[in-house]
Image (cartoon, rainbow, N blue to C red):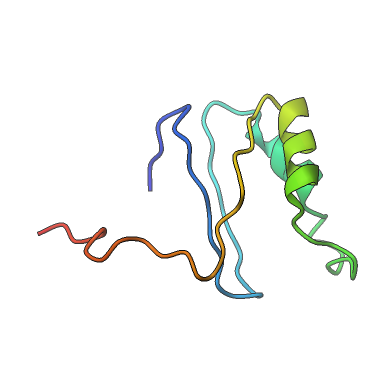
Length: 85
């Protein structure tokens, strides 16, 4: 998908094994993802978790605004939202 710069958005992963590949242009967002994640050359740290307060702090340092609260598995897009007919 394409998101214009400055458009508020969110992700909702419904699997504990999901992976995400993001391409951002211009560069700079990689600092946010690097700080929020871990080096994939190593196993996932046992205590690693996505925490909204940590993301907000990391985002502020990277020039991002983290909106919240995050979506939950119970949050759903409206019926027909993705229909393009």
